[in-house]
Length: 157
Image (cartoon, rainbow, N blue to C red; front, side, top):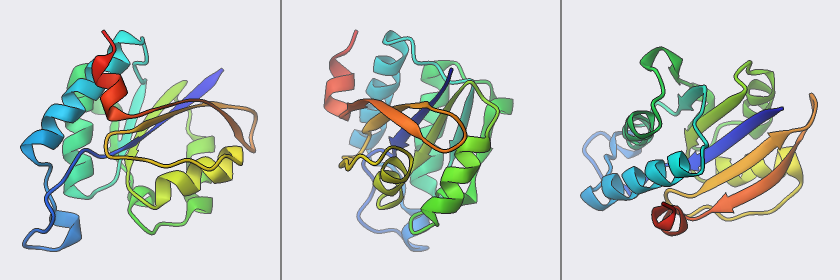
């Protein structure tokens, strides 16, 4: 069985010198993602690999999650297909072709709900720090088995 964790980055600055890609996590965003990581660890959802968008807020989110979940640096990868506005079709193909048993991906709106919709047919909303848990069902799709807000994961111990 192969699994996919789709994670929206933590709360970020409203604006940054350098544009949207340069927006960093806020202090609340860092704390929230640390809690998300602790919640995922408590649920036993440690990924074998961690992909992230090259945008700063996604990189910072992935670093925090990687530490909380014990993901080896070598198993972390910057993936340009995970930027806002990327093709959900191309990103879904890459995720389905990945070899990791459990792959975690940090990305953005509107790509995340588009990916869930393309892979499962479900319509979902993603708040900052939210996580969708999917089980891959063959080469063409997935089943959504969990969708958790950052607040809910912060309460898991």
